[in-house]
Length: 167
Length: 386
Image (cartoon, each protein chain N blue to C red):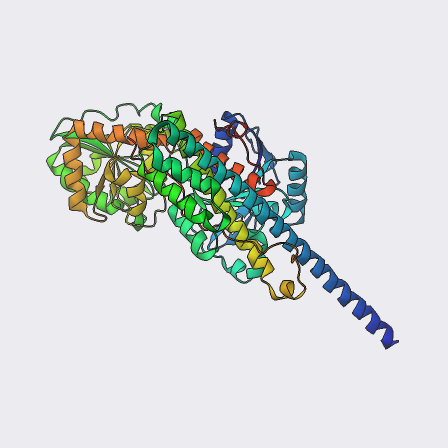
């Protein structure tokens, strides 16, 4: 009965294709969810740095860094990247003493922000690569989520531990 | 924090990655974290209490060398069981691109995964044949660490991703507290004596030993008490034969030394010389010499310049130039004040490479990976950074 084998073969092929599609859909969802989590973590670290900078500026460095911190905290999404870069420039222009707790808070917040930015960029790249695959686009997998966006800011690290210029 | 670390290479054979994993695990335990290390090891080998054996490693030729690794269905089952039982907050794998326990752990993991890349390995042939498979592996990694600028460059250019550069650590206390060998380093009177040290494969061209030999031979003719202390694997005849017969008494060979003896050896000389001509991605030995409080003279390679803070923590000489090396050695042996100034700066530099400091930076990467997985930010105190 050759017709029977033909049916068996078709069932196997359909099974394999279905498994692959389910696996791919799961992979897209997973990468998408991770990029969104990373974006939330990045957001939280941006707020932390701006808050720490505002506290420090209020105590010590006067109008300009304080203004930059406020602008970063209040910026609308389209102006956010520029405002954060501006805050980084302002913080770099003042001399921060790692022995002072308020300064150390800003240095530590900047360091954690740099890590969050790095991880976010990598995870967004992975998610975009997965969603950009032809099959994924054709079947509109993950279309319920917005397309993952890079957050393009300069490296916010202030005093890298490797730069031994503190001595 | 509960941390699971995977070491791909067997602890039965000494190696850079294995030492790194052990030192990191001990530093993290010292900071109050729970650490479990999974590594291949023979059934009867003595392991530190925090190491879990994943079974015997099989020597396999891989990427031009022989790696002792564990791979296959049995290893996979062991890795899965270890991950389930460990209930880790973060999984930290080393060298995940070699087919090894690390790769299996990445494929079995569900939560945050941090990966450390040690070698500046470009894509291996096996993996470049399967770009899709490489992507599946890499996208399970949440955060990447590179131990050198070179390893990071490979990440950025070939793996299409960033990596945080965190250097290898050094356990400063072990080196600073080591007892010098009996009778060493001896006197260092201006113009007459002094001792110089070299550690490594003296037969390997890129280690630059012939440059040091030439400088030493010239200098020893002027300074009758000058001594050279050499440690490293190799045949004594290969070391002594190229020296003029009358100078051989002034050369001492220790052979291959253990880690504690390495610390003692570094404490036994006035000057440690690294005449390498290239191929160094980090310069671990320099941080160890600095930790031992020894003045360092090194060739002007990128990696060395970075470790020596542009020449403030040690003297740099033009790479491959025996005359310049000889002049630098003579000047430093005659000037104890300059040696003291260099080692004082060296102490500050090496403090940044001390394992507890390096481990705190690794903890920050763990925090970033955990945060990127569930979107919540971790407090400094909880991570033990404080």
